[in-house]
Image (cartoon, helix red, strand yellow):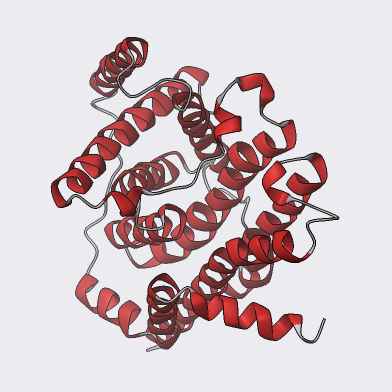
Length: 312
């Protein structure tokens, strides 16, 4: 009974975390548009200048770091604490990065295939600043820090350190799948759900297997740097095709060499009860409803921002 009450309490806290992160994630683009419409003489966030990127960095810290600092103590989670953590060999970190990139590429291919089958190009309509893609050295350093270093680190601290650790008290499979769905929905925004879900599962397994948050951070940053470099190679590029094949070959070699090192997944009891309890938790239900409302009716955020602006 005590464990059941604790489970319900922790699931409700996770639901509150999701509500905060979902709301702030969807509010961010509207706030950016509002600033550019009303304060364009002072600041233009779409220009990716130093001050603009500093605002983006602050928004990332608010979206992810504040929920971590506020809710982690309520879950009795020390974000950086590892039970059996130790130094991981560099070759293993490199191997994990290569396998992670391979998984991302496979997921991306599956995602693109599904979008092509349903002819839903609008699902994949993610705006990209073309000036950022023209030359690596033209990308502002602060934007690079914000998008490919800060965001991945904050997301890993939230999803793999706080949420995964909490859910793992009630089962490995449950924690891996649920935390990866949260990661894919919030970070991927449904447009890239499949590759982000696959990558989330892979990172969760690394976190449980290695018990060292630094390893997961290095692997995630390595994958993000590859995604960043991918923008400079057209999808039909011969060079990128060779790189992709090389990644698959190295991934297969690494998996084969480490085939005997498997994570021990315990046979959890009453997993159906845990899953039912999670999805019946009040704040989890609220977070799911909030996500679908903001996803289907983004004008709700516009009205909220306009209401707040009247009192500023």
